[in-house]
Image (tube, one colour):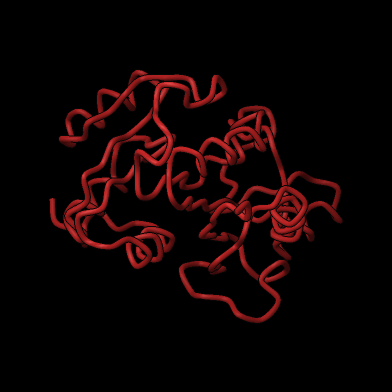
Amino acid sequence: MNASAVLTRPDYEVIAGWIKPGERVLDLGCGDGSLIRYLGETRQVRGVGVEIDPHNVLASMRNGINVIQMDLEAGLAGFGDASFTHVVMSQSLQMVHHTEQILREMLRVGREAVVSFPNFGYYRHREAIAAGRMPVSESLPYQWYDSPNVRFFTIADFEDLCASRGIDITESRGFDEGRQVTDDPNLNASVAVYRLASGRS
């Protein structure tokens, strides 16, 4: 499988642009390992995936990914401080209960953290709520009763959390249907991607 076949989401290309060739990357909630495989082919990273779902663990192994089966809710105690250049959580942050804990752990284990997530403040989601329905979209594809998402937050909410917890946002991008959004991303972007660093000296 070539890199163009693996690239299926706009956040992949952004993440790859923030990572230098040969870096060590930890991908949390790695799914079938597509992102690590893409980073391996485009940036020659040394990647490790973390995944809890046994079917995804098997799929990652079939994709040639070094994957560890573990529950992110328990933290990353098995990984040493600054043991990775980047720790990535691509469209999985909304699926964890302990949001602050996982962000702290990402910045402990990695020199930088990268997260992407669906923006609940997206205008089409607001329209669905105004019509009295939970939104279903490309970035939030599940019905309310079978969604794996446990946190629903906006770009503005995420930025407020980072500011209040001493997390520096070094870069960010917003996207709608694969196109980059620069005009009011909190309203017009369906997906956001953030590059983070610890604000503590």
